[in-house]
Amino acid sequence: MSTRQPMALHTKMLIGFVVGLLGGLLVHWFIGSGTPWVQGLMTWITQPVGKVFLRLLFMLVIPLLFSALVVGIAEMGDIRSLGRVGWKTLAYTVVVSSIAVVIGIALVNLFKPGSGVDPDVAQQLLRDASDNAQKIVASGALQGSGIDLVLNIVPTNVIRAAADNDILAVMFFALMFGIGIVMTPSPLAKKTKEVIEGVFEISMTLIHLVIRFAPYAVACLVFNLAAVFGWELLGKLAGYVGVAVLAMAIHFFIIYSVSVRWFGGMSPIAFFRGSQEAIVMAFSTASSNATLPTALKVAEEDLKLPKRISRFVLTVGATANQNGTALFEGVTVLFLAQFFNIDLSVTQQGVVMLVCILGGIGTAGVPAGSLPVIAMICGMVGVPPEGIGLILGVDRFLDMCRTTLNVTGDLAAAVVVSNGIVETDEHAPIS
Image (cartoon, one colour):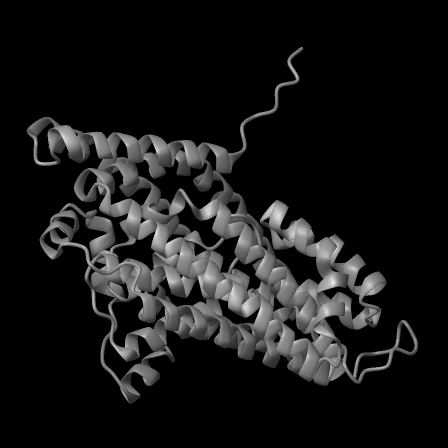
């Protein structure tokens, strides 16, 4: 009986990336993407495979984001019993995630890792973009500005907003719905929460099925890009990875150190030393959910945090406090905008930041959980979602980095929220 272990998904994705890249480069060097048989290959095989993958992702965006965001807010529990702990956790999550996204967007605007691509070549690729993605771009493109943009966040009809791919409006409704569940201590509200948790679990099951198709989609999407852009693609990709890692490092070492020292009353050295077991686990698994048991152990045994507080903050944080994911999504969307020579206005970048913050709350804490959100944000601001093929081959490494940021951020949040709270009775209400 064979004991051979199946190949890991991220290994398959890397192989797909390399195969697509090499195939595309060979076509670019020796044949040319305009050759009839290459055009036929792209029209009838590689583009349709990429289209199917993107359609599957878009199909699951609304149920996944809605259920994840509602559950993330609802996990705050009864406001009257949680008191300031729940609101302190929520405020910390929003503020630190905002800082993370600002750092990422600022560095992308500063270094411009995606700029410099020949506009004519980029337009050639855009002309070959999938019809489905173009429909999403058209329906999700930002309308209006200033006060109109703010007013449009509040939907008059959430069903119509979902049908029109108005993600901001849907996320606003999900936010309000989650708050409503928190503020309604009734059996029916509890059952409603359980139903939405079921929707989230089903959505995650389907996402896992779709992601299994990713290696083939990666090969096709990257082949199309490499055949058009050649070596220029590799340079842009290296710049993208460098900017993303730099932004994460700044947030990890500077923002978290400031948070635990000034607002948590703990030495940053002691914090990072005590958190190292969870940090290594997060980097290895690339999953906030898988690291949760280790993070709970670290918080109680190494950081000596109050059990009730750390359990609440870390459990909620595994889904809702994902600074690294929010930062990564912002960097990726702006990088792809630069790559395709799409100039995003300050207002559009502000909306990207807002959606990334909410996306950090509504993104599943599993490997590659942010891919549907990135594709959705691209569609909102007119960036071709096909561009995610660029980043899928290096996503595993960046996923490990951003998960490390997420888990460390959860522990930092637990330190900050615990500051000034003395644990007494294990079963006393949090106040």
